[in-house]
Amino acid sequence: MAVEYVVPYAVARELVTYKQAEEMLADTPYPVSGRTLQRWARQEQLPVERIRGVVYVSFSDLLMVHLDRALGREQ
Image (cartoon, rainbow, N blue to C red; front, side, top):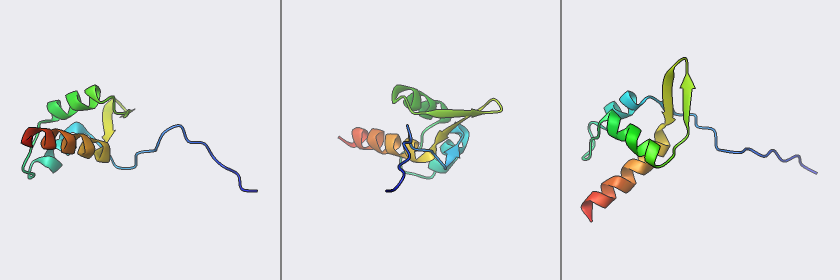
């Protein structure tokens, strides 16, 4: 019988600041500001981590929100 572990949420390994995410998305067809990313994260209730006063968020979560918003612009 295998032991199962229950994880309440997926652990994000690719944590970035909003500024870092802004820089990574700058070369895409839909660049956004760090403030916009922060607003989207708040609206989508994305989990954030605070480490020594710096706020980090999962880059993959931000990418999914960015995709949804970019597709919404094209419709």
